[in-house]
Image 1 (cartoon, rainbow, N blue to C red):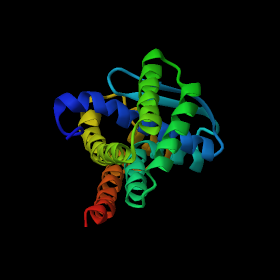
Image 2: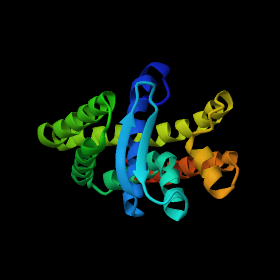
Image 3: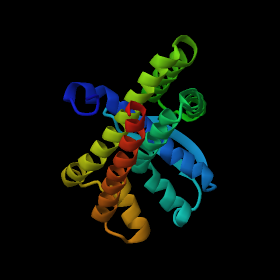
Length: 206
């Protein structure tokens, strides 16, 4: 519901954007690029910049990672929750947020990351196992459904905008594969993450 109702999505989309930009940042570092900054904006958009070769596999992987990150993390969290590893997931989240604090380059982004860090810290140090599990489930479904919603919304965003600066457009310029095909890939990845995640979480009920 957090990713479906308009009045909740306005707020929770910032969390999905945070994960989106974290995906760009992590893959940039893993592919040998130098991360220079992350910005999160009030309109729920974001920007991650890195220094390195302007073309090549590293740049393609970095551009691809953003829209894939929420669904991939959602699937990973589903596995951690289903295998009773919620504390590990929370500590990993704290670690990523702490690193992001170093690279945030605007005040609103700093506010979003600080609020997220405070929320996770409260879960780690002030909540019992049942509350942690419930929060992890909510976050998992937010990422899975929110990740899918952002990939679908990208279609309409690209139609309305002439700037052609979306990740799909960047990938099109890097690979000569049309942007709509990249957008379709984002949607397929998000859909593909839903089924195994639902099966993993269903085992907890069964």
